[in-house]
Length: 455
Ligand code: GLU
Image (cartoon, rainbow, N blue to C red; front, top):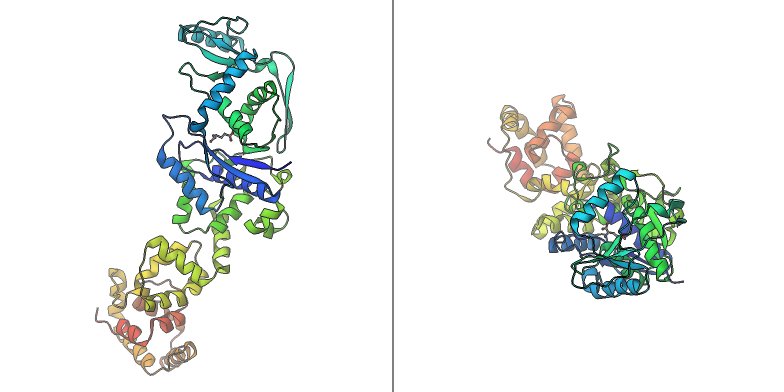
């Protein structure tokens, strides 16, 4: 059997962390089994679906390189196929026309709530065809027996059929419901494995009845526990960025994000397995955790920093300039590239380097913070003396280091007595990467200019 999985987001909001993880698991499972991974946009809720959300879903999936093996399916365009199936179920008496008006339905709802039983319409067993009246088509749920789902993550779970209500599959305006559309599309797309959030587990018990009535193959289900925030509640806006693509804008790499998404629910003993290239050959459903994972930004930062440190400087440079739309000269590019390895020792996201970009690329950079200016004015002589010692130095990191050491010993000073001052004069900050590298990369002329600047 060829494995075919799908990711079926509703474009009613951004592609969030949970959705991205579902997409990734479906993608990896298909890759591992030399199968196909498909994307279906479930855009049948016209009021809530927006083109912006469709765009955000594509943007997020493209960034993560979770590409559909075939053209993307739009559920709204399959509508007629869904309607046909609703009528087929009707003809074979697995469904019925229900003519309850809103008031009657409300009365039934109240009764059902009071008695703790599902709604059963009085039209269930009547064969009446009155096309002059509004009707919905409901599925005739079995009322006895049990339904068992052999879920790859949750195990075998059974329910008593008597708790199932006769769900609507076609509304009175002749639009099919999600419960029907999703099943029909899965069948038409040849989906063999349904991997999705466990918030859909209840739906599976109802959707499977349609599949059984139609004598279709039952797909393999894997319902993954949802992701929680650090406080243990379901991950939401309160816990930070909701749009997965925002993490790219914040300076995370797609490799780190995929690695982290994989950790959110999948376990393996070998750290290297979480790398997307390895996971493509290893991913298995039986290693998905049964309990919810907690989203932890510190862990993501840690992973991102590791990936950044293993990447080519040219690639990091590209990420920085494209994310900020910087247009650098060759000279500026060279300086930035020479400094990137120093920054990598201290940053989690590549965009952090942008906080320092001004002193790196702007030869005319001057210190602006009042607090720092006071210090530079007070220690003006010291700055000038350091400039003097650098002036005679041959421009290599070793020579710069020796010159500074000689100056310190001549003045009986310790490095930490001039370090912050040097950093402030050259970068406008007291925290910066290795000062010798900074002096070397900025070059003699700029260092002297900044150290001798008359503040
Ligand atoms: N469209 C549904 C959602 O976004 C997913 C349906 C499914 O995976 O079956 O939650």
